[in-house]
Length: 155
Ligand SMILES: [Zn+2]
Image 1 (cartoon, helix red, strand yellow):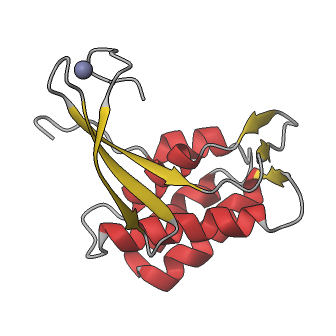
Image 2: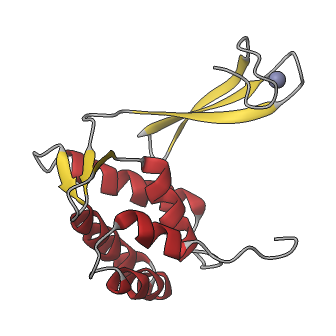
């Protein structure tokens, strides 16, 4: 695994342990070249999912993008990070088990809302209010962009 700080490819695994109730392996890594430390997660990927936008555009499903939008909706809410990870994994698992590799962006938004509603009402309302604004265009990309909070000084 290449070091994200200096680009050295010869990094070491210091520690591996199960995470998210054993659906992921968390590895803490160390770069001997620059002393940098970082963490990677290993997860099962059953299928290569493709997101279909209403305009017909296709793009590879990006778990990180989904995770960012969910974390923004849950910002400063009393939900443990571990629980958020489990929720994301649950969403991905559900998408993977739908029997189709092509998934409409709308379906993803609806599943996220359903899961958020079960975890935190405030986060659900945040996510849903933004989502509704984008039902006209149904563009998941714009939708996610809208969820990003304004940059705060020092934040
Ligand atoms: Zn390095």
